[in-house]
Image 1 (cartoon, helix red, strand yellow):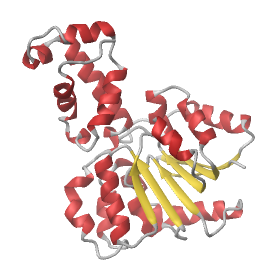
Image 2 (spheres, rainbow, N blue to C red; image 1 turned 180 degrees about the vertical axis):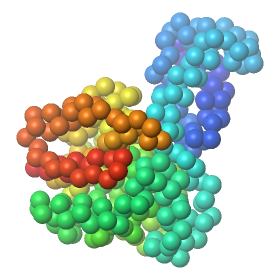
Image 3 (cartoon, rainbow, N blue to C red; image 1 turned 120 degrees about the vertical axis):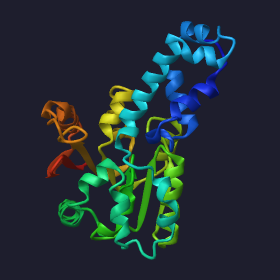
Image 4 (cartoon, rainbow, N blue to C red; image 1 turned 90 degrees about the vertical axis):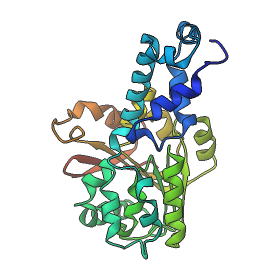
Length: 289
């Protein structure tokens, strides 16, 4: 592969020029873009004398469409409204229990769907975790978290430490500021769960329970079987893993065979699990040790 794509920055900016992708880091977009490039594509894209000519070409159009599709499948499809649109309001909340938090939760597809059920579901979830041996003084990792950390008020028992991460540094910065402003013992950081940086990070961390909510399908889109490696690498006693029961928008049911691999993997690892559900989402409560 040639060392440099001449119009790399221009192509990345064009990919990002969609409302649902604006919060993504350019470095992450670049990673996905380069993963779809071949030597012949770079040669063709570099043959143009201007970006105006390049973006009119078939190769550039196909590359942009493919990269946007991957980014939407993993991230953009969940964004109803970018969190940055509500930065001022988020950072001016008087309490994490403020009613306006629910409005912000509705701006992400996953938390929007959970919103009617947080108050009843979270107590059931933690009752199950506590019955399996989770201490009421627990640390929580919320990976590929979306806006879920903003549902902190619904946790029936607050964790001694809450670590949240997702791929948008803008969103994690805002959520981290929310934690700081509300004096919550927590941290939010930007991580790609498939990156070496995250692998190095988790190799030195231990969590009592880890959330991976609607995360694994998105990881599998990028890299097949990556979820198994990730689950095995995370040092935790318990996982809460969820899968959607219906497609985005709720038009089509998702066949149970789409998640059967996860059940087989748990059984192979001798990890016990139970299930809980709310409309549109199935949760696996997994005891890893």
